[in-house]
Length: 210
Image 1 (cartoon, helix red, strand yellow):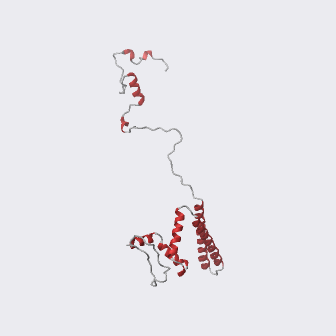
Image 2: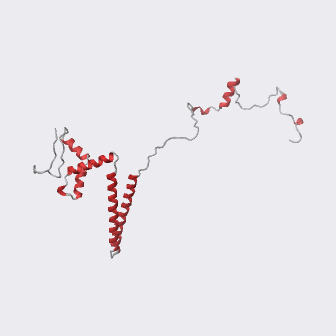
Image 3: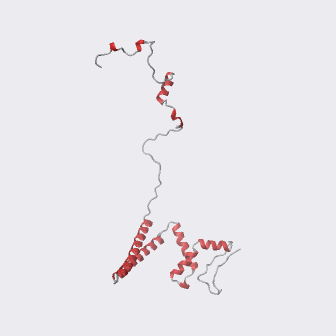
């Protein structure tokens, strides 16, 4: 189903500034409306309502300009955003000064408090807008964390913790491979009576002073 135009006007001879003008396509009515809703068409209607342009401002023109602004941001052109933030910062600063001056002309403490509180809120928003503008102009570099070690690294491939119960150390194993003998790791036994020369020195042969 081809869609040519979506309009709300009752007079075909005069275009409706609140109507969305859609070019002919192969999309259905539902698909066309879905593209308009997700593409910012509703935002264009809201923008027109608060802009004060009245019937002299067409929604279709707003949709085109908003799409252009979005395309600029996508391509990295932030000049429009920078101008917008600058204008908002100046407007908020003006609100701060206006409210602060009005609070100074009040006769009651309540009137001073209300206006001064609003003035400080405008001042805080102006400061936040200035910080946002600074971030847009000078974005912080994104640093990805890398696993970089300074100095030599030791990598144990194939090491198993399951064999921790084996108390035989690596030097012991190396000694066995070189001499072909198995180390006796059993507990130490007492000296045998077969070889008396290997017994402990008797009391008579011991020195008087240790």
